[in-house]
Image (cartoon, rainbow, N blue to C red; front, side, top):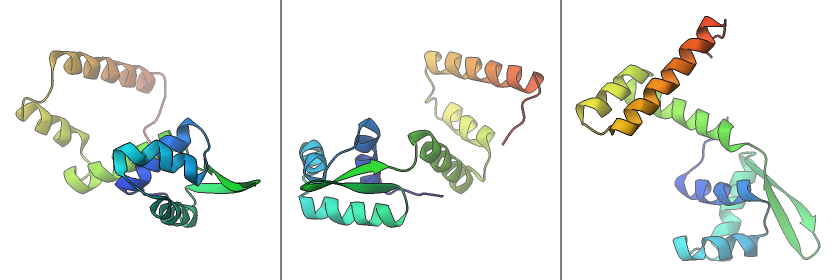
Length: 129
């Protein structure tokens, strides 16, 4: 199970687009973060220990690539958030959004479509993880 900090998410989002060297990551993230190469190196080292990324030698520079998919980490983070904030209840989360009037008509229609798709899968014998 890999848990990412906000900064690690920034790096992973770049690596999910394609592998990169430390210098390339620094250049891609500089405008948004102002991070120098030492910060990138420290974060990549931590991410390698978590087994979120790995590297291979690319001549003069190490080339970093992800070991986990965005979908895997996103689902894990979503489950963690739901458990931490709403005791695992999706209904409580949606109700909080409704009570806050934070859902647009378009989002409500999107939720209907998602729920219809889930119902169809369940009716076809799918199971909940």
